[in-house]
Amino acid sequence: MLRTQISKEQMEALAADIRTYFDAEVMRRGLEYQQKGLVYNAQIQDETKYSAKVQGSRVFDAELDLTFLVSSSCTCEEEGYCEHMAGAFLYAYAAVCGRPDEFVRSMAAPGPDALKSRTASVRIDSSLHRLTTMLTGLEPKPGAVPRETDSAERWSGFFEEMYGRFAHSHAQQRNHLDDYFAAALQMLTQPISWWNTGLRRLYIASSIVYLMQRLDDMARMPRSSPYDSPGLYAKAAKLLHEKLNQAVKDATGNGKDDHRDSASSLHSEHSDGDTSGNGHSAATPVKNPSASSEQSAALALNLALHEQLFRKPAGIVDWLHVYRLLWLKLLRLDRRDEEARLSKLRGEPGLNGRQRDLTRLAEAHFAVLGGRDEEAAARLSLLGESHAEDMLPYLNSFYQTKAWSRLLFWLRWLLPLMKKAEPAVFQLVADYWNEALKHEGSPEEWQSALVAMLPRSYAKLSAFLLQHGRYKEWMSLHLYNAASPYDLSTLELKQLEGADPRMLLPLYHQAIDRLVVQRNREAYRMAVKMLKKLQTLYTAAGETGRFHEFIARFSLQYGRLRAFQEELKKGKLLT
Image 1 (cartoon, rainbow, N blue to C red):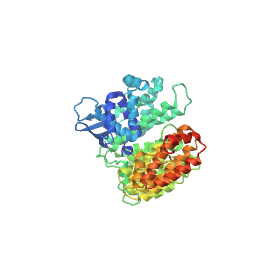
Image 2 (cartoon, one colour):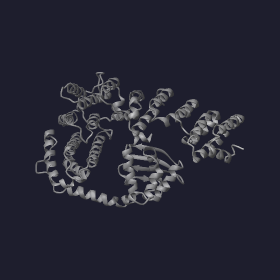
Image 3 (tube, rainbow, N blue to C red):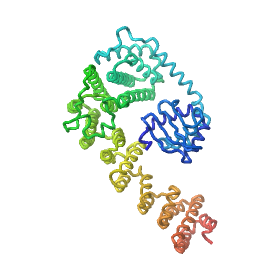
Image 4 (cartoon, rainbow, N blue to C red):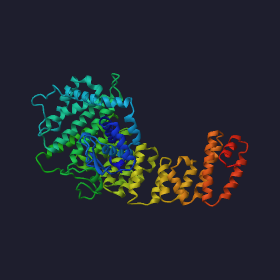
């Protein structure tokens, strides 16, 4: 299930690198491997490596680095980027984004894409130049750099002092906001690279949250220039979200830390060492000299999150995602205390509807972390408006840890939301359904789920019914939706014809009637083609006589349509 292991955003970022570094002819040869089914065993490793086997003169192992393409490799003898790596990429692209042939065609075609490829290195050099320029001449003042023993308030003062100088010196660079904030983050984090692991991670997360606050403040201000567009702010927000994701990934990715990732936390019914049986974490800090400083920094960071999420109007930053991510992977605080804060906050009279919904979403987050799914669902049912996207991180965690019961619980809860979900969200949730029911549940439940998600699940329901030999239901589905045989897969039609050709008769009869009433020559020609196929089906069913009776009545019914009668004679259906 590559679609659940690599996001569309990751694939599009990889595709941009592929366009820059791969030759169009290499991609064309890679497309041949992909289209001939010579790419297999594709998988994601450690979230940053994508590998697949490619059958050429022998089996080659192609590996693509999702974050640094130049680190990619293949076991073939070719130097640089080869067709086996191209084939592996196109296999993943087909699973996540769409048609690989169109991607390859766009690389070969002249025009904006070709110009983009030729100028990519120029843009990269320009970006590096901007970053270097913005980082020049902004050394901290003597004694200004925080020490490990300093408080979180001292960090905040350093952020304010350094960012104030940075913003004053580089206001003209705000038409490149992503580079602007990348440089600002590097400036704030460079001086503490030698700190101990726990404090350094909290410091980096705090600096990113601080910059997110500044970005939100900028986005709320009146537009001051034609360069000051919403797209620039969205691009900068995406950069900071990615930096934060990387920071918390570093906190959980090496397996030697006492932080645990979202998958293991959500898999456990009563996680994080709680022995009280209530699903909450006491989260006692590790006994070490910096434990008190870490606790203080975590509390300060949580206070900043509360201020942004529950007190400020909505901005460009997804603060709910930031809050849930940090509590899931970085903040080692007592969850019971946080839940008490949220409960008190929700009772405040001054909250508006959006803020009250955010507190419920946060409370539901902790209920899910504690394995209290029914409680979480009850809280979410009180929302003014629910969105399927809010549950995607949990669904992925349940899938990764094979927590099928919990996955099914939330999939069932999400069913009413599927008709309004974005197409990509719908596809992902449908994949989770299909996978979960291989382990728990029944085919009948999957069919009921697909019916509940109609019309969006039309193609998936059709494939399911055919796969399970439910031919009458398959035919009823397509007749109800007035489907034409030309709209359906040839393989599906052949499968049904092989099982019982009589099953297809109503489908062709209905389609032929719709064509004839259009009363134009092209529709008549298509109707005659279908009539010939109908004749084949009647013959295969051993009912040739019935077809002759039908065609006689049919031609008489439309006897006044001279052009149609001519097409029937051309097709030798009338003598």
